[in-house]
Length: 76
Image (cartoon, rainbow, N blue to C red; front, top):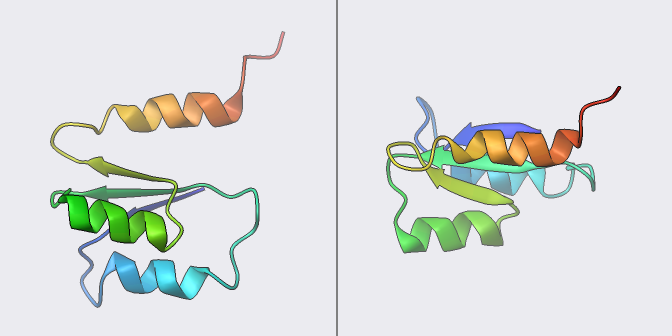
């Protein structure tokens, strides 16, 4: 699981996504969070291997849905 912002102090999240391609485990999940959820950024993130892109201002709560889906039902 990787949660990544597109705007970084040095470089961008796109660069991180590019560098992950050859090293990323098959069953990993990448979530991109951004204040810039433009359609072209969403498309580029997904093309570079992100599984999800969420707008920080309006879709932040969706991270919990993704995490719940990955974790599965509670044990017990």
